[in-house]
Amino acid sequence: MKIIKSDIEAVSVKPSQYPPAGLKEIAFAGRSNVGKSSLLNLITGRKKLARVSGSPGKTRTINFYLINDEFRIVDLPGYGYAKVSKSLSQGWGEMIERYLENRPGLLKVVQLVDIRHEPSKLDVEMCQYLRHYGLDGIVAATKADKISRGQIDRQVKVIRKTLKLSEKDIVIPVSALKKTGHEELLEVMEGLLEE
Image 1 (spheres, rainbow, N blue to C red):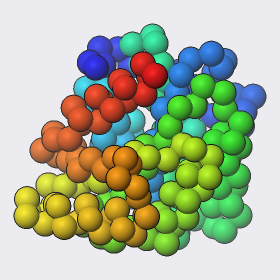
Image 2 (tube, rainbow, N blue to C red):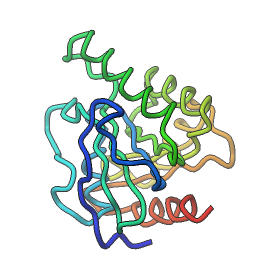
Image 3 (cartoon, rainbow, N blue to C red):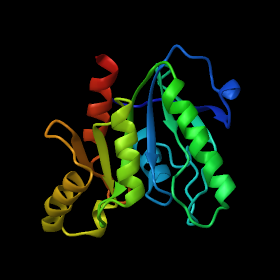
Image 4 (tube, one colour):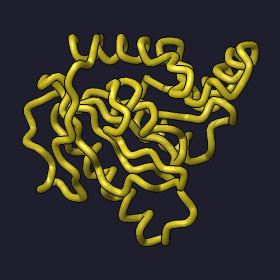
């Protein structure tokens, strides 16, 4: 699949602000600062579609991107950033839950984890939550340029074991910096859209 057109369609904090249902959607979720915006910019081929920030927790809304006028990529707020108030992070959780539990057309959630570290308790909880709703099965292991080739396989095994992934679950090492792994991710997304 080649993304030739991508536009922000809606920036939402509540369902009434979502764009109309009717298109298939693939959402992206990950801890704050995992490299979600960089990855979204890489797969869409746009440098500034998603705002990249050095400070974690920048995405505080659910951002809907219309792709090729055919489907949507949905950028969910990063989870688990300590520097936001408890009430605000709780609000984020509720905002994400409302979207994930009730959105028609939502096919899957691509969960992003940092390949350099064992998935955190929050990553594990998110994976279990996605599994409960049948939205799991695709993990993008970001920042693959930060470790050696030899370490990648080892870290993928750690991710698989920690998140209790099955053999059919997909883990794709990606690097926005080196522009690797995104073609494989796009192929997986294309497969989902064709099902």
